[in-house]
Length: 156
Image 1: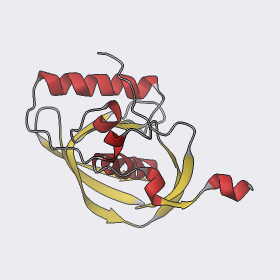
Image 2 (image 1 turned 180 degrees about the horizontal axis):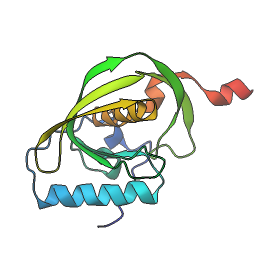
Image 3 (image 1 turned 90 degrees about the horizontal axis):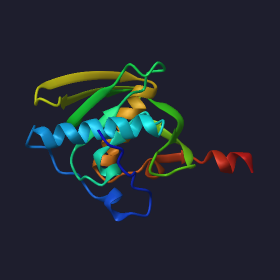
Image 4 (image 1 turned 30 degrees about the vertical axis):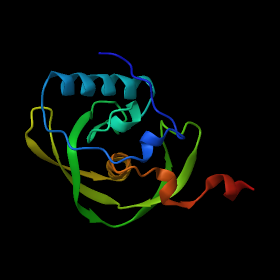
């Protein structure tokens, strides 16, 4: 495993649409392992492959408090959404920036695992936000595109 450099806002790759994964091989497993290490090292709760400069539909996440909820999503799709939540978000690619976004309160996601097997995941609260945030990255969308309120402006 190796740490990868996180791409930051201003790099045009963050606005590109990622391509589906077609090969489930050692290169994919290395990418997943490196992304996991990079996410944990940077105290993130999620990381999309595009954030490490790879335009593939790959996400790693761990929204659990005890860091035991690690999940890998390959070619993820949101298949169900319910409710609404407005909460603060940040992003490893936009260090120091936060803002209030509107996201579904609950989501169901279909994705492949590292071996190419379909899985379905459910998330509420932070996990639902993380699913949406990371899948947005795969389509070139940043959380700042979804701001409903800027907490800095609330202080002024």
